[in-house]
Image 1: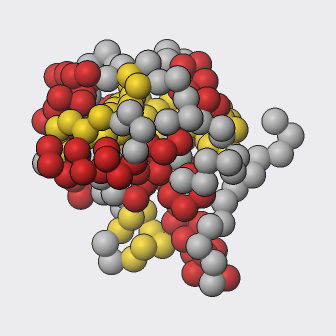
Image 2: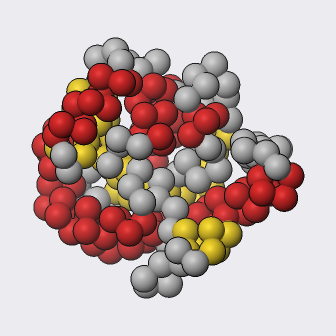
Length: 206
């Protein structure tokens, strides 16, 4: 498959790119600025491509989204026509500007549900909310990744995550996405309280 990391020039996007290089999939980093996208692709190394977000969205089969929440809705409003019918994996965390230990969205729903409302016809999944970019870029380290979304496309998403050397856990429908996003705030609080940077969540009995 062709995987585009939209808004992928930050730490999380680069970590995704490095993980995905271990898979048989083609990978592109997208950005509003083609220079930044190409620069990030060179930094990621390997055969990673650099494109504008719009070109990457047209090119891909799966869009993996790693934008800050304040740019979330505008990204999807601009790309909704080219993303219809595709798989979108939304890793956005709507951290409240006034308190990083709280989650806050415009609609009161999850960021992933907002994505589904904007991009009608896309298969939207929430994932990667309980793994830090530091752990993700350590390609030899496995980790549990919780995935929420509908049935269509879910098998492909779970297989993609497993191909990245991670343990994919089906967490249910997209309506549960808000709980996954809030787990990020919980982990940030755990990190802060224990003076650490890489707390995570492991699911047992599955």
